[in-house]
Length: 378
Image 1 (cartoon, one colour):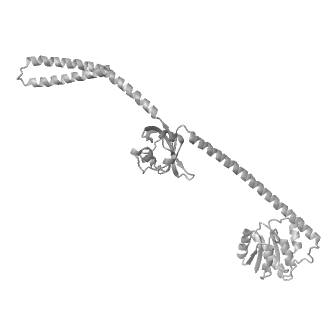
Image 2 (cartoon, helix red, strand yellow; image 1 turned 45 degrees about the vertical axis):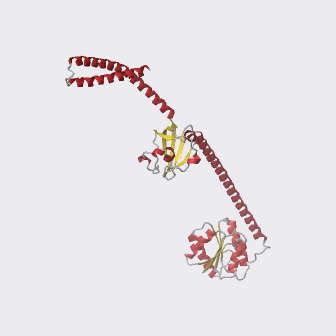
Image 3 (cartoon, one colour; image 1 turned 60 degrees about the horizontal axis):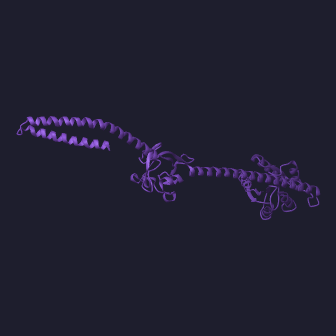
């Protein structure tokens, strides 16, 4: 048995086609009443199942054309609609010549049972053929017009609702986009105005971005260094292209959290930086780079070194003054005793050589203490 299904919704056509073919019906499809008439006049069709509200020619006019055609009027006609669902719609369908009326969404068993019943009635000669249905049947066409206008109004309301929902969605999206834009602008302003170094590296340790403060400290512009390896630009004496964020925990060139490392500026000056860093991850938790924040502590380090040197010099100075004085006294005693021993020792005695060596050492010590005292006085 060949069934013609008529619907402007392709998904509805496909659904019904699959259902009917699985139940051993041969299926032919049409997307409106006009196309359906072309098929009916060129092929032998045993049953028509049609939607009602369709473009070009709706289901009511298709049914009317079929029932007015002697070659088509005995083909059983079933309406299946998701728009016309009122009892008035069902009654109007019967007046146009339909054998049955089914609303969407339908149950498969109910549709198949209705088809079986309609075919059985048709085989028994029970076909709904209106006796007189033409443009003079004011009652039927008045009801048709009312139902059509009603459905068109409902469609327009649905479209208005969809339009309103879309406009609200677009307005909300614009609000979200505006909030995102403001957030990006705020983050950008923080990045640019941060009173410290803000640095972003990729997973291989190449420079992605740094802020104006870094340009001021280093003398390098982002434009000139983007894409280059961090260590090659800022730590050339320790440079290595093997740096990567993933392996930075085992890499001596990593920017260590809360630790100090030096960078070399464009002019060759060494600056001491204290770093705090964090890995950057995407929405899947994959590491995509490194964010590092640095504070230039060169001045503090220099002041601490100067204070340490001053204290060390002071301690050494205090220590040296007493030490030189005592050493000078010891040297004087040594020279005095060596002189006494020389007077009592025969010049041919081998011991005189040792005394002379001791005397030379004492004299050298005396010279050293004399120089030290002069430096302390200056």
